[in-house]
Image 1 (cartoon, helix red, strand yellow):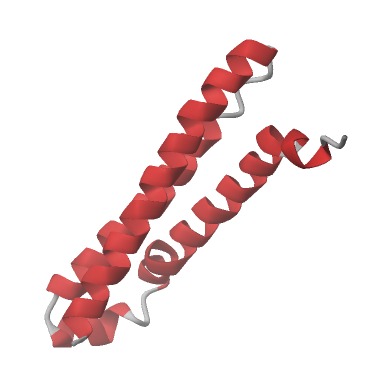
Image 2 (cartoon, rainbow, N blue to C red; image 1 turned 120 degrees about the vertical axis):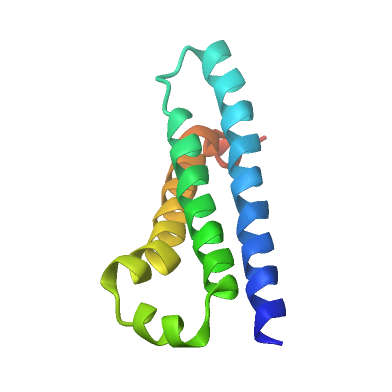
Length: 108
């Protein structure tokens, strides 16, 4: 059961990473039309950070239980497993707000 949850978590993070890439492409096209600064590149960084978290979760699923006991106390592992995806999603939300907040400001 734990293996299945780890795979689902990695699949979910991969989906978020792909959504960030789609937002990067849409933002790139919008930025080209509006001549905005190329902040869309941050979406690629955010997608890479989330992908690192997905890969860390896959590595977690494939590792042995004795190895896992040591990993939970390793600060680098915690940063890869939790910190990278959290930073990536936060960066993605900030950039999406930066590029797309004008949609919420439009009024009749």
